Amino acid sequence: MDFDILLPIVVFITVVISIFSYRKLEKKIKVLFEDRKFSTRDTILMAVSMGAMVTVIAFAPHRAIQILYIAAYSYIMASFIYVILKKWYVAVFPPILFVLSYFLYWNICVFNLFAVVFAIIITVYLGSLFSWKTTLVFAVLVTVMDYIQVFITGFMGESAGKIIELGLPVLVILPTYPAGTMIGLGLGDIFLSGLLAIQTALKHGEKAGFLTASMITIAIFVFEIMLFNFEPFKYFAATIVVMSGWIASLGILSLTRKPSVFS
Image (cartoon, rainbow, N blue to C red; front, side, top):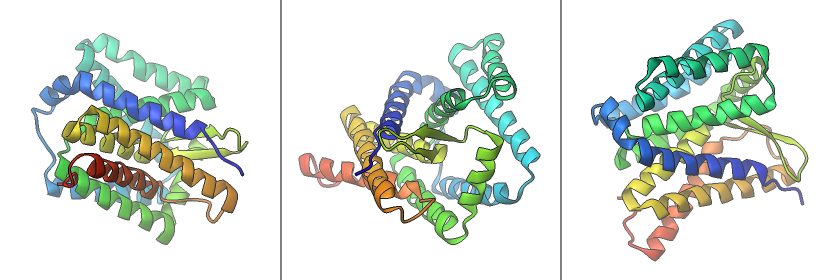
């Protein structure tokens, strides 16, 4: 029976780092956004926008996508470093390193390093904008969107193929061990994992956040076993796997604590 431990480990470590980073930077991030929270309307628009972006990428020219992502990532990275250190002359170096690496020294290790860094930055940045309620709304909507774009329109697969061709770090691509193949997971799925873990930690305590990270990791591990041994699909809506792990963690919390963990 083929299985993989590398991707689940990378996801777990990334989510745990996101939890610790959010705890450490929470006050600075809240000051940046003036303690603002997404409304339900904002959350719906964000989920719809993510779905629309997948469609745009499927049809947009390669060069336009490349320029858009490099510019967006450079800005996000610079602004994040500036929020932490308040020194613009330090904040400009990581984006420069990213651009130089992308054009001059781009390999799978550097690709995955920047992908993980971006996943952590986005999770920490946006984590403070969600409440428990809007997290529930976003998680459901983005899962539905993911299902539609993967299984109904097929645009998720087309977009992923185009992004991989351009070498943009919008997903992690890892060799599987010991299965001996390759597998990719989108940053959106890692962001959702981190967001759910952070919000669960905020509502039910840090141990609950680590439990969420653990159960999502186990869900990914089990899903990969099914994928490698039954091969029913080439692309899958990984948000369903993430949600399964999160729901399992809330189920465990209900059994060990109080029944109203969703409220």
